[in-house]
Image (cartoon, rainbow, N blue to C red):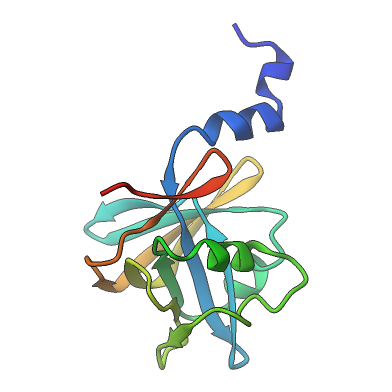
Length: 162
């Protein structure tokens, strides 16, 4: 049986961190400038219709701006993207100053060198505790099978052993 301290945010963050996950960047053009953030809570949801999800904290200052974009680029970051992931998670800096990116005419922004690019629209948002689950409808997918993804585990970025 758990005690209240056993479910503190710090304990839960550490426990959840034992599960390795990929790292994605959700990005779009807003007023002709790239805006983006990282999300390590990415998962595939449905094949028909094609849906994926990310989870976004209610405290995010980036999401309220990003969610206004008609299209979102979701990039599954590559093994070499530890600094990109850190930059896109940082506060108070130009997140894209050292990030190589491409944009579609519709405004989706993708990080170069990623394992997958998913061109998406917001399908739905569901409140879930201190986060929102954001369901994204995939309109186009571009996989780069030669690129290994980066993995977030135990509060650090890791590469898959091949």
